[in-house]
Length: 103
Length: 391
Image (cartoon, chains in turn cyan, brown):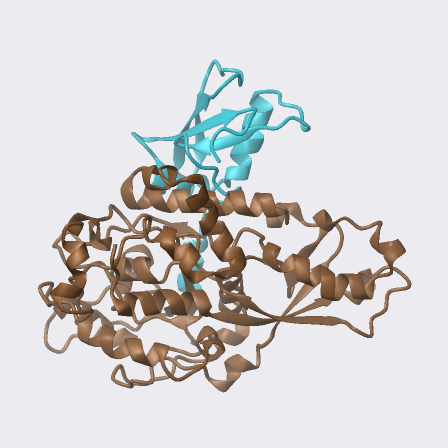
């Protein structure tokens, strides 16, 4: 096996599912269904876009997302990596707010 | 919390290392009337810094000199972005990591085979002439249409600071399962972390970061290698020399490293100083790097393979320290075949890649917790760039 062939194996996308649990903070609207299964290779950017759509958020309105009530992941982090590092009880907990909540 | 002089020297070397950067324009994008007689801005960019922090000087010494004031007024700094050989450069990654990823992904690196210097060569990894051919690092400034789908963030200082603080908190969470250490910092202390990066002030940054990043464990096998290596990395060559070792290849990591790691008795006393030197630690014995839940570590594979971010516990199940070899073999067994069980006559399969941290080919027997304590970037994360070996 050449180095490139070995690398190709690790280029495969992680298609496992991660359960994302959304939690509203402050006066952000509460979602009726707040559990979603998202494929691990998706970037966090996709989660942001998904949530904006679910909440019917206007493009001009601010929306802040946090993990574990403490930090905002980089939009290019994958859901799978975030779950591996910050998952709790089988979920990735994502808090959302219309104002900045944690600096 | 006291840290051994050796650990401190490594932290400082990481902090002080710089990359010569040459910033140019794509001339075809310049507005009419631009004066291209001055077309390049040179700087020595700190590895732990961010492109956003270079922008003010790039603006002053390049953009404002080249572009006419009337055309300049129509430009927005928010649209500025950097690129290298077609790759947009992320604002939220440290400059050193961007450079290592660029070299790690470029074909030219792969054709430089790892040199077979012995582990006992006390000169340590050195940059071969070929690596200097890549310097200064030539990056291009674009002044419009940032590709947000590849950059993911814009160049603003506030955004860069927020992203930096989030990485710091993430690292705290990975180490201890919560972000209490960061949250409990006073406002001025939190500011000192970011201001330390802006001002390149080692003492300002580490006076606070030392509360977050635990010192290396005082039980540190295989110490004979580490201690002989430390002076070689730190002495002699200038900072720049040390910062660009990416192309150079490592030593015979393939065969020796695993056996070293596996043979190392965990009771070997630290060579980082007599027990007395670590007296401050004894009361905080549960707070050294081996006591953390995991080490914040990211693996950057070349050629757009997905980045891997996996919490790595400092100790293996049998109590031995986790090493780069044990970690890489667990995560990427095809690139880093696990060493065979010890039997006379068994030969380890060669590794097909090597790990680079801050431009240095790091020996595979290095302990993860030691690296996580001394080789982290300012954001608290240890970024390991995987470079494919020549084939």
